[in-house]
Image 1 (cartoon, rainbow, N blue to C red):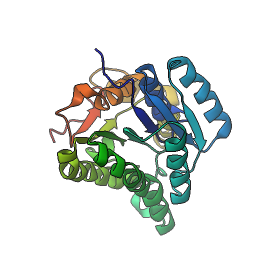
Image 2 (image 1 turned 45 degrees about the horizontal axis):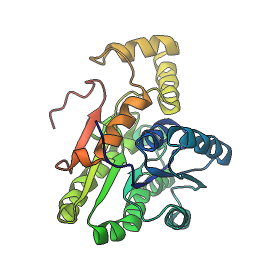
Image 3 (image 1 turned 135 degrees about the vertical axis):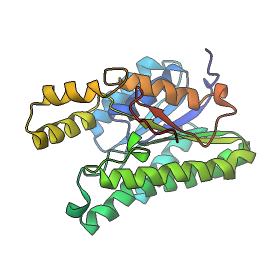
Image 4 (image 1 turned 180 degrees about the vertical axis):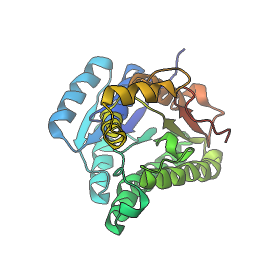
Length: 264
């Protein structure tokens, strides 16, 4: 299927590894000019090389940036427009907030989580929306988590903020549909990333079992019987960013192998 976005400029946040990196590479393979950010300059340099291989006919950009800091987001956006052009596609993403139950979370952790998980999405959206409105075309995809629909006690902070992002996705979609700007979210389930491995170790330790034992138990609860691959989520992101998704907006789409049982 031709996604018809080979001429588009895309920004993908927190893309030095994991789901952000996979999404950036998927868009590069479709011919997009891709700008990525992350906190590790060495990892970003490697991602830039991979982008140039995945999308050899387009220019790409990698900018060190902490997504919790407004000034750094502004710098990344300015550098993208200066080097690649006005932004057509925004994929928001961030590392997950601390894994903890409610009674152990401090107010400082709540505030930090809001900055890194929620406000970065708000800030980036504010940066790209004016030019999208002026050109009457845009795609915004928020990478969140399945806990937006099926909260986890261990992930109290993430569950709360991801649910908020689903509400933001819906309100943004309704507000900007008239401008031909589509806003959707993808809710990854258990995908093979560093974050999944970290959470697996925590849960295995809490249960007093080995990581292999935990992985076997966790995968047995997934109807498809396995963890997902980052590329499988990235292909969904690329579709949502494309011309082929032209009547799809306001959706929080689970990419979880059937894990979440909720019908909502």
